[in-house]
Length: 426
Image (cartoon, rainbow, N blue to C red; front, side):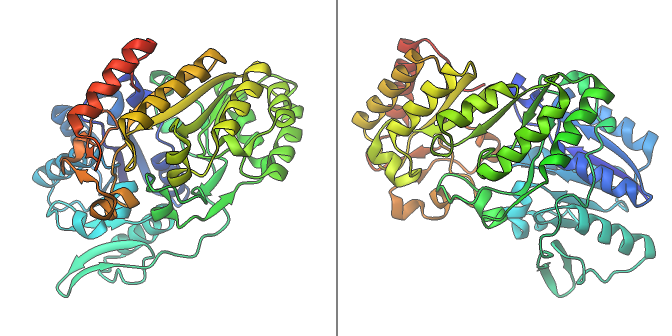
């Protein structure tokens, strides 16, 4: 079958939207192609959503199935794309996957232009769905992780048990125009998500805390492939917590040694999952950049939402900078228990870490579907200020708390970022 996979774009284009290729649909494309299907991939974060361009692709490629990947922010554009596909080719099945459909499958299936939803990992559901469609079957009950509607109602099938993360092969980067991305070479070292259950993150809702690491040798093989095939000299490992397992990391660093120092790389992790010898070893193995998610400068707030200490953050930054690693620290405001005083603590802590050599990033805490902040908003004293999904980009104040209005939150952030001389996240 001819399969068109589309990465739905953000509402407001920014450099961050074109930061790195969409590995999720690149993996889907590779797996579908390995089963004999013809695949084309369209990342509309490169060009923006152009109905005229989509019409041209539909006319040229004549897809028999269209799959669309959507985050919460990009979901409204995913719906626009689905509607356009149906207006042009009503017989073509439209499948939506990605974080937002995985969290709210029933809501997505209520959209008339959407025929199917994939929950969680997409390779096996998409393959089984393509088999069913190709054979003319309307029996979708056996397809794991598939949501659909029939005459009896809405159905969301259970997902298959997670298996070997290597079984799907490498993502089909040849289906993407890598020259348009700032960080063109990103690599996933594990399937599933973070085992921590932070109340502001929806990953645990989607993956239930399951973390399935790939073999270190396979990860380094992929990095080596990017070097030889594409001339990559820098790779970013996009996992939420790169240093989750010390044993895995040690094996990974050993494997990297066979590349003879020809690769530099970056990653992100928690401050309580690094130590000084580890960071020195990472730097010696080519790590040139690291991002720590710290979130708040108030220990009281950190105890309630992150479970890390400010001392651990200071130590991690000091060790990382001393090892020669470019160090980024990310923060968010507000949290449910924030006050003017705790937000002042956050900016004072940002200033302290900047003095140690860290580069700060700041975003607005966003009550994404699937998070505790969204689910238990009333209990936490949170007022969710909008259900316009396009605003769920971490650049809008979407939460008022029991202590702070949206207007006061924005005023505090504007004043403090101007004082410290840095901008909110792009």
